[in-house]
Length: 385
Image 1: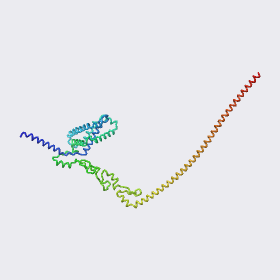
Image 2: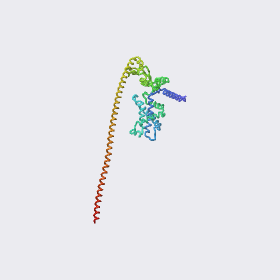
Image 3: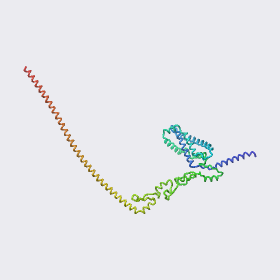
Image 4: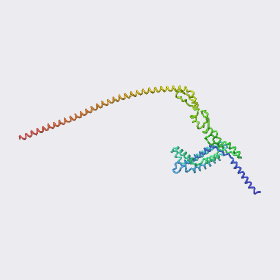
């Protein structure tokens, strides 16, 4: 009998443990879907930023080579610091005074990025355009997402774990527990954080029921009444296009607006307007044609005046050309006369030059004659001796 006592105790402890596990398993566990998705994206962006900052300016390292190490370190820091914050927040009597879990995680992630920023990256901020680095981070985050370096499901699981650790106000997570599965099922069907899918055709976005009204007020696929009070139901995203194109209540001018009809009316009644005011439209058309005829006559008259003016200008130009031709001819005649005068003068100069030569010859002849006379006298004197 005594030997069976420990066995009974063991069975009792096992039953209590199973009851506790069952109670834990009957916890709601719904999360704010939107906040989980935002936190998931924040984790991916932080990973990409930290990788770029860690390797920026390095000659041999690339962000892709350090992804796994940086991710592992980031997850460890998130768990360690969130646990430390959760333990320290127990001293707060009012949970409402605690910062939002999202803010806590943001601060942890900011500190992590700062810790990963290398010396060269810090120095480069002063000499390199920061927009270039931001573009590189954005491209690398897109590369991580496309390559599936950190799957969405894994990031959302981490976000849920962080919220569960930090959300003492139960704003982002429903931590209610139930003693029976029936109670749990009934609660989940009404839980404010239960995930719901937008019923509007073409949307399909998933969000927590608590945000249903907010989403409904902004959903681009929701059918709403036309803003111009026509009877059509139009998607919110297509309302502007509908109002300026197809809406029968769109205000348009009458087709005869430029002919004198000043009516502005909804395009849905445009045909009716044209039918009812056919007579007045014809009268507007008649007046318009008369004005056009007068305008054409005025333009024609102006063209004639311009033609006459052009003809006079052409004649004047011809006269000016004739006068110029006569002037040119006169100048040519003067030039030819000058050329003849130059030729005559040249001949006279040559004649003058010849006369001078003859005079010189005459002088030389006389000198010779004198010399011959002198010699003759001397010869005669010698002969008489």
